[in-house]
Amino acid sequence: MHEAAEYFHKHHSWIDYLLYFCMHAQTLIGRMAESTDVDQLLSAFKKFAIHGDTKATGKEMNGKNWVKLCKDCKVIDGKNVTSTDADIVFTKVKAKSSRVITYEEFQKALEELALKRFKGQSKEEALQAIHKLIEGKEPTNVGVTKVAKSGAVDRLTDTTKYTGSHKERFDESGKGKGKSGREELVENTGYVASYKNAGSYDEKTKSK
Image (cartoon, rainbow, N blue to C red; front, side):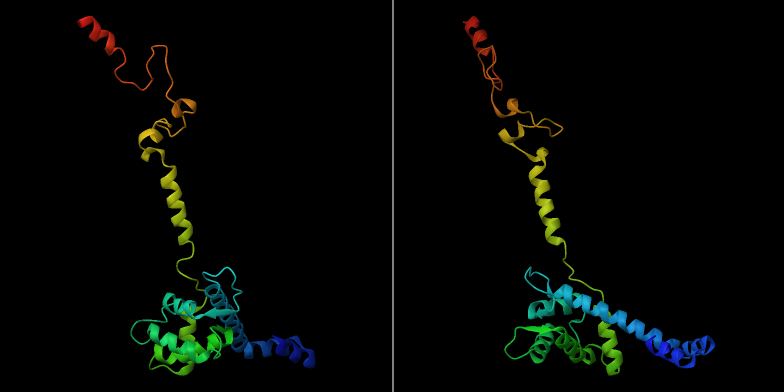
């Protein structure tokens, strides 16, 4: 668009501007699409880079998360590309003393794997294909921990599954009985409320 504006500034004609735009529309649209694709690739890199590490900035990715990205995004297919291939490429592109890769090194790693993953395609086609596998993606188990915790809480708070003295503290609706559910109250009969043989002593005495 910047080039089109310069062209219009030189010729001062809307007709010339429209003609220029029509002639170069495909190129301009292609550049816009490429920009969007780059943003989505960077977004995926950042999401995987911070996965499992609350201190991560998203600017660098460790080897574990790199392999996870390759698995989750199907870069590793178990045939053309394996986990070993991903590890080798990671070691190849990173700085010797570093344990992480930058976004630029990440792109180099994808270039290394592209032709191996998409055999028979040109370098450009293979690179585009591998980018498509990753663009806009995120770690597959995001939210799993939260769901698991929720399930555990549900089990702990389900009063229908309580047994023994704990069960006596709630009615059928799950509402707590309060003090009556926590204590065995003594009634005027002289027996504890939960005693099942109340009154049987007198009957035995009379029978004698």
